[in-house]
Picture 1 (cartoon, helix red, strand yellow):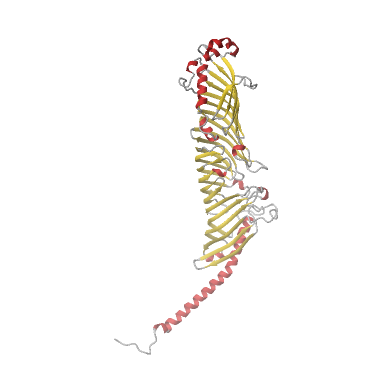
Picture 2 (picture 1 turned 90 degrees about the vertical axis):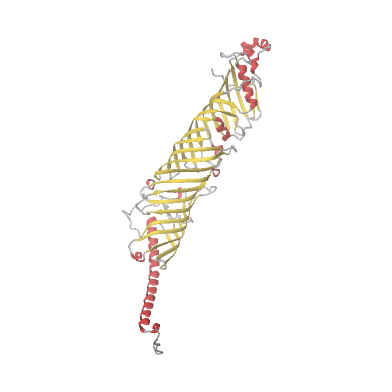
Length: 540
């Protein structure tokens, strides 16, 4: 083998390697210097473009604390401390002194081509936003949402065009002028907006926590384009899934609700269709729960929360309910006023007593038909204290759960038919009765001004009231029987009573006598009531 000459230079010290290497290093250094120069001059240029775009769009002062550009992974832009003073501009600049910015963003980032910086419109595929807060002031302290400049005509030139916005940890705060009422807060874990543009609809995908009732909502759909002249006409559509909603966050009711449905329309007229399921629905007047399912068709004004139900079909345990009405905001009063008309064609009175009365079992069982109007005015009190329910009802195949009371009814029926010998605990046949009348439920008190109670052999007219806690009953009425007084007694004793039959006969009845029903559900007391002056007139 030939030996290498000791005077020959290694290849890495040769001229053909050193000169190109130095050239490459010079070029790289120049590129780094150029990139640094571009970054140093591009950052204020891009920062100014971001501020100009947002301030032009919202006609509001815009602040941006930091904005940095990096070329390590393409052209990457990172910013922090973005604040827009108002989106719903006040009529005067000083209308909300010391108020927080309506929109603040902790940080954001996006990537784009470096040459885009110097284009008239910078196009960005995706912007990632972390820690955004949107503060919506009380209605009296804000102007039209995202007001348009009347001097501006046609399509404005946007300095930055964005295809997709990805929000994480987005909070919406709806403020109130009532110092005793906390603001309404929506915590949106994730929100994706795609096809974002000023004059076109964008697609949204949101996951959020609903504040009242508290629960998780997932919604997808379309929103826009925004209508500058009349924001109420801005279109939207979508579908939603509402899960694990805790109804106990609404005073007066309880249970865990789930719901899903679809909606479409404009902000001022949203048509919504969906279903809800609450397997453990309850009222605060009772500890008992019943399953509640609803199918609803509603019209919603998202600008003020007004809702029209057209209609709601509900199933409470074994009872079927149809409700129509409205839930409207009242001027000068926080909250909404609820007015509903309710129709029950196939119901069970024991379902409603179970739901509304604390005692168990329900005092009465039977089939129910009813027509009623319910009103719930706004206010701080629980729903059961504010609710006013008035209507008429009819109950068939009724039986009483208290054995003692049912035995007394059975005994009365047998005697009223002229069979006193059957009127005892061993021989009396269990009977069912029917009743119809009107009612008023208010302040947890059921008032019955006019009720007709019928059983085999007897008709009863009654009025009175019943406490929903089951602690008090106070009813007065008159009984009309088919049999005479002597026929009701039977045996040799009827001979003693026969002379008085003509005194007790009235309006074609064998006998008519007043009675009273008092005591409690657990200890009812039924007795004659000749001394009561307000015994209702018996209807024939």
